[in-house]
Amino acid sequence: MKKNAFFILAACLFSLSAKSQNNDKIINSWGFAAYTDLNTTPISKKTAIEPYSGLSETHYTQGFSPYSVSFMYRFRYNLSEMSDNAAISLDIMPAVGLATFRAVENTGLGYINIPVMVSYNFGVGSTYNSSAEKGGFIAAGIEYMKAPVVEATVDPNSRYAPITSSWMQPASFDGVQALEQKK
Image (cartoon, rainbow, N blue to C red; front, side, top):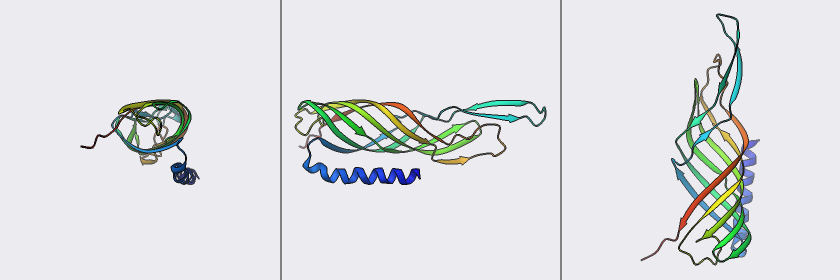
């Protein structure tokens, strides 16, 4: 079901991009980030009975991935354009990432996130009429996150909870942009 929802969202965004040629408030872009994300999963709790003592023990697990490579698509609708070089926009930035999540005895691979953000865009790319050569954006909102997508190792007899999960969380993004000068 979640895969279907992701593909439906992607299809909607691509159909909107076709319309964006006639609407100067819609801006689409692709992105790539290497080793700039720090991903953690929510803390999982599992209570297990110790085989030797028969006592109950509670263990907490959190997946952690310090290195990742992600590919993202950014759909942006400018809600307000204060000038040719400044705009407030609504952004949807689905991303797929390659990362290894580790947590005690369990590991997993990959993540998907779908943030919905409000952003302040300045300089180049903030509007279709921008004359700046450099710029950027600052964004805040919420995102759906699924990580890891694939569990690589899971011991069914482990005292620790598996790390596969999905959740909603607050999110923030920032970025810089520059106009490529052709010689």
